[in-house]
Image 1 (spheres, rainbow, N blue to C red):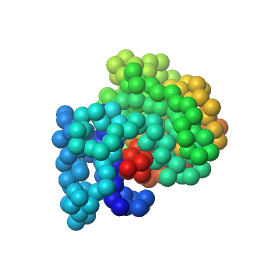
Image 2: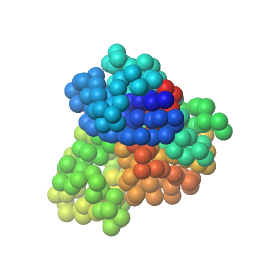
Image 3: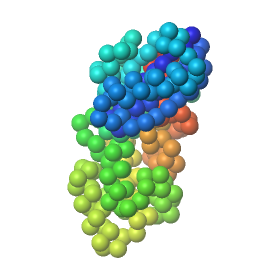
Image 4: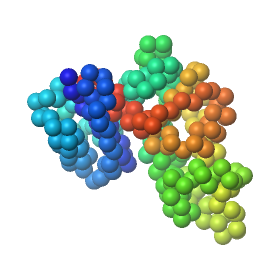
Length: 251
């Protein structure tokens, strides 16, 4: 029984093909101008790559901010529900989720069976998100993927603004004063953790926390988060696909 889960984020769209709760293939690409066209192409590609026909797919489930644009899917489910299902699949001990996406971040509390008990979401501002880091890294003339390695070699400097526009100006000012990029990189990560800590304080963050989203592979961010929250922070090399996995499972 094949199912497809699609998570349409503001920056990236993720797709997962599953068969009897086993992941067959997953893929990510930029969401682009038209989420519908992006998803149609992804669905076509993943079906073709696995020598399947559309009739072989029992259901296609969409989640994420762009799900409303997809008129060809069988179901549309909230990303909170899909992330809960996906995180529990990737780590059955999960009791809470921290997700840092391209334009928003969220904290989700689960019960022992993986049902959502409570959640808090920051979707009004890009502060502390992947987009925030992209803008700041551009101002620093480094790649986002380099940030973790650079930060490990720095002493965090206080970043006063979390507004993307003002923070960019602050970084440019710090550069002009000769502040080391390693110190700025470490300061940026700490400022994001400050934002996430504020978010998680509004729910009951249990012991086994699953870290998902595009920043989950940033080891420095993960280490600082673990130290600040004093919780076990788990992740997975497929954690960016948590929402899409949950959507496929719910299909």
